Amino acid sequence: MSLNAEKKIRTFFNKYFYRQHPEAALRYLPVVTEIKKAKLENAKILEIGPGSLGITPYLHKKIEGVDIDFSGPQTDQLVKIKGSAIDLPFRKNSYDVTISVDVIEHIPDYLREKAVLDMLKVTKKLALIVVPVGVDSEKQDKELHLHWKKIFKDKNQFLEEHVENGLPKTDEILVFIDKSLRKLGTNAKTRSYPNLNLQIRKILMLAWITKNKYLYYFYLKGMLLFVPILRFCNFGKTYRRVFVIEFTA
Image 1: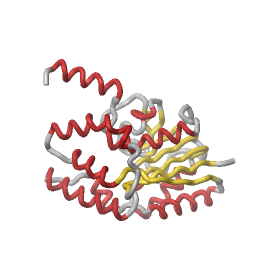
Image 2: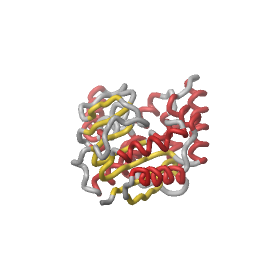
Image 3: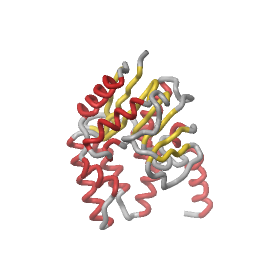
Image 4: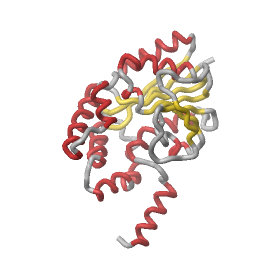
């Protein structure tokens, strides 16, 4: 490929998909949809556990994020606040919207209810929890972690935490939400729906776990072109679930 062609491709992806990642997009786009549907895109938003980018490549606005580590690609749209998901340093109803995307599974199971309670406590209008759930998802993560170790001769921190902590079940998250709302004396409507077919997720992850730079680049950039279709692949057995908590007066 010529340098001119590479420059054009890079310019195209930076214009339309800047800082985006295919698997992350499939997690975050339902959250963006819910925020816009509630007409809260201009509200005060907190992301719990965003890392260095979080939702910013998909929502395109400045938000606040609380995390213990912000290493990685940087953006000026994320206001970084050092802190823990199980001890949020904010007062009740501090944010109109709070989001937690693929974070709860990294918290030991005995602390997950506390994380949900803290999140709902600081929320005024809308909370969104996106999390891998169920035994089938857990089984896939175990297989992928073994594959990672075979390819790279090392552990992957995130997959390892999925395996060590175990993934929550849908009913567990619903119970955590209900108990937290009762403790807070708050009224809210809760609904949930599936996210990302397990087999499609497996294909994406296997393309990610590779030493082949061409396959990896196709995954990282080329697969972004298929996200508008893949975002609707929420049928059959799915990897994660989206929980929507809408607070009522």
